Image 1 (cartoon, rainbow, N blue to C red):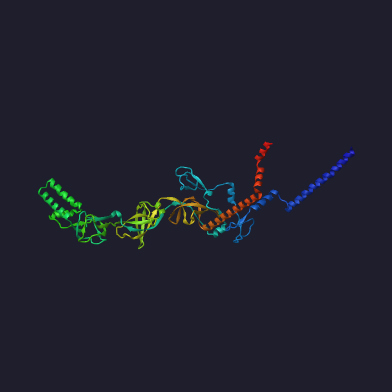
Image 2: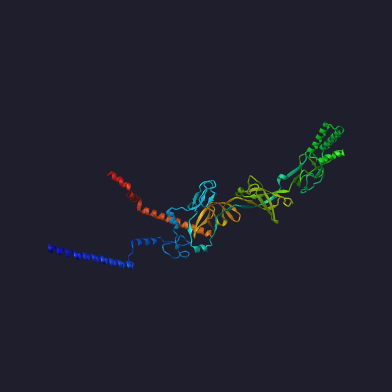
Length: 501
């Protein structure tokens, strides 16, 4: 028994010694490899490998060039820069950035912070991804300086707009009149014998003979003699009746009194002007026979004139009666005439496709003459406020209008906007798409637009290539393989067959 136990203990000692020796040898070898850099933690190796694979390099001017290592652009020779993945991270996280806040009942009511609208309703957010009009871009700050990019702040202020157009002077139609007679006869003498003569009210114009006037004068004298012999109410009524008949013939009161003073019939009575103005039409000569109702003179009062200004259809909504207008004449520099909108025609001119607006101007010195041409300026939008940007910030195309919004250092986002009216001081009204306080690009946006379109095209090409690769892989596997793969991956099918068993 003792001898067998001794042999057993002596057999275990060499095995233990060999095991300890092996462990110490491996430990020493591992330590040496660690210090030599031949071994590293698996997690660290995987992390460094993923970091190396995640870093991609691209060209600031040619975004379609993408490489997995630094170097120079094969197209322009510029140094490649790391590709920005901030936007991709944001899209992966599902975060949405708010561009501005808008009133639910009035899209033109825009705020840069949440709150209540003018009607007391909660403002609704408008997100960046709803307004983006292209692909966001990022450029190097040095390249940004070389491109000459300049920005301006979106502001909310006055929407004053001056309409500049042309116009021509014409007569005020409310101050034009015709001189005609209510009886027939002959013109014996003309006092106003040429077109363009100025006449005043009650000033003699011509002497006229008419049998009707002779009869009326005889009746007047007879009624006056009867009233003088017997001044009763009946004779007085007859006298007044005859005088009224002469007044209806538009014979002046002074002419009637002169007939009574002289006590005899006058061969021709003097017809006086019923208006003050300028003779614009003359249709009579001495000795002419004139029928009742025929126009002898046409008189226009030029103390105030109309100017027919022409405006376009899109400007019509901003013009209203009573607005102030200014007019300058090309042959009288420095002189301004101030008037106002008197009337807006309710229809368009068929040939020119514009609207005529009547402007009323005072003309005390008679310098403004009909058919003169002038430069007209109509001020609109006084007291109105809204969002506006410099006109140079808007890139206009046939289908949409885009501005570039600065989102940070070297980061720009194209945004589609809805434009309103052009404003004074080279500004443009913005109805939708921007909020006060944002920064928009006013210089260099054409290069940004080109780069954005290049990146958009590059993305579309990449998507098509990925789609083509998926289609090719699908064709190689075949529809049957896909079907059986789906069957293998579907746990419900396994459960179905288990239930059958």
